[in-house]
Amino acid sequence: MVRPYGKGHKKRKKGERYDKEEEEVEDEQVQEEKADSETEMRAQDGEEKTEEAKEMQLPGVEEGIPIVPSHQTGKKPGVIFVLEKASLEVAKVGKSYQILNSEEHANFLRRNKKNPADYRPDIIYQALLSILDSPLNKAGRLRAVYVKTDKGVLFEVKPHVRIPRTYKRFAGIMLQLLQKLSITAVGNREKLLRVIKNPVTQYLPLNSRKIGFSHSSEKLVQMEKYVAGVGDDTDLVFVVGAMSHGKIECDYVDDFISVSEYPLSAAWCIARVCEAVSKKWRVL
Image (cartoon, rainbow, N blue to C red; front, top):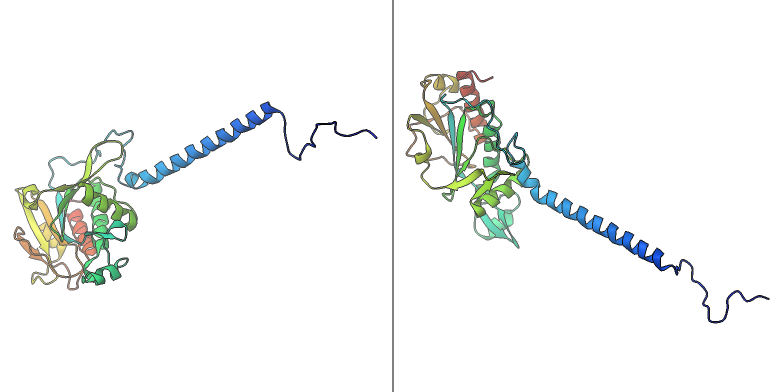
């Protein structure tokens, strides 16, 4: 019989290769696949990190070049909203800082002897959506939005900001704003949201009518007739409370009115205001 293997030769194991070039080629392929996988993971991480920033990107902005909307109205009178007593308080919950809200942090708030009902950041979120998504803003008649928190922090929101569509992302943006004092647009350095100095009156036009809203006001009005009586060359400043209960007390308001026989949310109140002013200025 012929010996299948000579002296000194070992039986070749299944799948074993002796060709060094073949091994080197395979090693190179494995390294390339690993590099491609790492590159893809880094790209995905980058997309996740910029996802919230993209939500704040200006409409029509490409490669950092800001484009002013063509519907700007020049010297025509406009509207300014001031949202008072917004619940936006930052606290360290566990290992991270968060915007406190009654739904997620009820136990934390009770342990710290705070009323969960007072922590409603969703109210300011809905109010901002109502303002910035309105035809009045899209027609270029919204001049500015100012928000004052219940802790006294004042910040400005530019009319062309695109607020995130979900509350979770909105809360992340507010947290970043209160920690870093400003939020810039993607691709350029324009500050879309920025913390500014008090009082808010220094930013309001001189020739403006400042109107506050309160359900407890004895002056119940039909909003369309009320704004129709204001001069066409006068800017309108509407002061709305962005809290769950209570009323605003602002000494700079010219008139306090009520727009319904029933208590309304801030978003509903703003919707009535925007609709009435849109009809006055024929914004369809």
